[in-house]
Structures are given as structure tokens and as C-alpha cells.
Image (cartoon, rainbow, N blue to C red; front, side):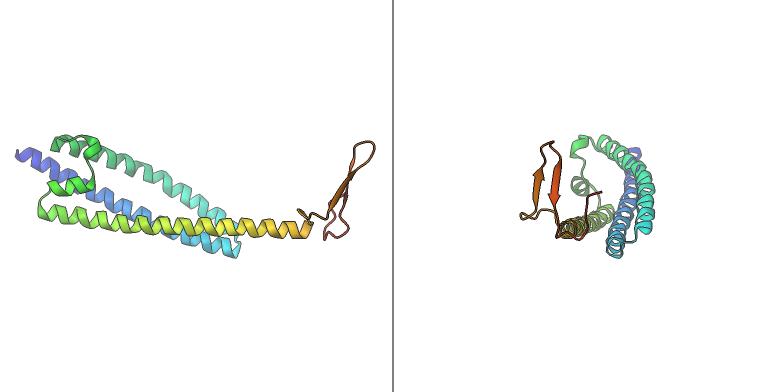
Length: 174
């Protein structure tokens, strides 16, 4: 029994380390989203390219943390005699003694708060990109006079099209 308890304690400590890494990853993701929005507003394409490269590098290392979390989850489920699908932080908390329960609960709440913030920041970034796209589309339409119902297109007897775009800022014909 003592060996099982020691095994569970070791796995709990490993889990706490993985959860700490999860917390750092979500915090870094929040930082990346804030930085990305700033670079979008500044229109700094070079810095955006560098940031995207850094994000891709950072995400690659996180896969190993997910794998480690899943293996710890499986080991804890086996040691506690429950199914892996039932091994959640909430269920684990109910099975732990006070000191371990407090540590797991603290990290769970921290992760929950950070993930909620990440969801909001992701939505804000998506909205910014959507607004940029909409603004660029409107700007392009106004510069090229696209989508104007007064603009006429006629066809010659050979089938060639002719745009009547005398009011356009830029002439698209060669």
C-alpha cells in the first residue's frame, strides 16, 4: 500500500510540473496574441513574420508536455483504479489529501482563469483581423470603383468585354 501511495505522490508531483508548464504556455500564448495585435495595428510585417516563426517553434515543444500529461493521467487512473476518461482534475482533487488537493486546485483555477482570458483575447484578435479585412475590402472597392452599380460592362460583337470606368481612381485596363 505504501508503494502505491508513493507512486501516486510521485505522479501528483509530475502532474503539478506539467500543469505549471501548461500555465506558462497559456501565459505565453496571451503574450503572443497581444503582441500580434500590436504588430497588426502597426503593420509591421517583418516583426509579424518573426513572431509567427517564434510561435511555431514554441508550439512544437509543447506537444511533448501534452504527451507527458496524458501518460501521467493514464498512470494515475491505473493507480487509483478508475478509468482514464474519469481522470479529471476535479475527480483527482476529491481523492487527494489536503496538501495535494490545495496544490492541484490552485493550478486548476489558475489554468481555468488563463484559458478564459485566452478565449477573450483570441476573440479580440479575430475581430481585429475581421475588421482589417473588411476595411481593406471597402478601401479596395472605393479605389477601384468595384461593386458600383452604376459601372457598366459592355460586350463587343467578338465577345470582348469593355468596362466603362471613367470615374475610377486607377484604370485597370492595359
